Amino acid sequence: SITNIGEGYPFYAQVASKGRLVAEYVQSNPGQDSAFLLSVIDAQIINRTPRPGVCLVLCGANDALANVTLAAFRANMEEMIRRLRAANIRPIVGTIPPNNNGTTDAVVRTYNAWISRWAGRESIPLVDFYTAVGGPSGWKAGLAVLDGLHPSPEGNAALGAAVVTDMEL
Image 1 (cartoon, rainbow, N blue to C red):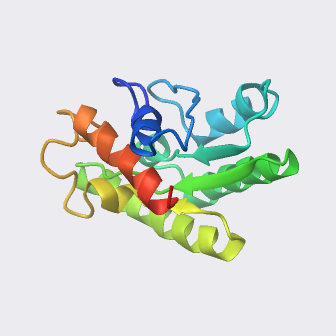
Image 2: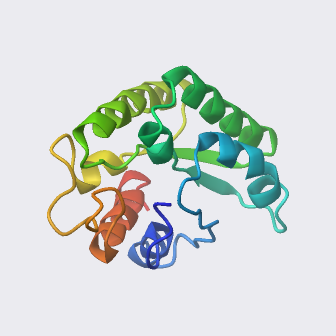
């Protein structure tokens, strides 16, 4: 649901890239987790016409809220990336933005540590959304809406800028 409020970070990434990135994205809905995204990746991304050349996978906030095990989250992420690569779609992964609930953010940090190591090991480009909008102390002021989970318009702009910066666009 990170892309469910406002324009979403992909729009801001396109703007910040000055047209070098053309963002077409599947807007998710509240509550969708990595298992759900895995179940729809073929229909929504891989079998799409025209097929995208690149897919940035950002998920895990809802997994963290539900305290899904790292093993289950990891298996879903690994399978999504395997499918993207098999379809000749270049995968990119993003770290999960902060959650202002300390207990949930501890799970987010665990997932993010794994995402960062895995991306490096598998040569998957990584966008560090977590650091771009905050970090262990939560979202930077003004970048999240009141729930402490979803980005404000300014937060979406910061997430979009992180895509451009980290992808060197």
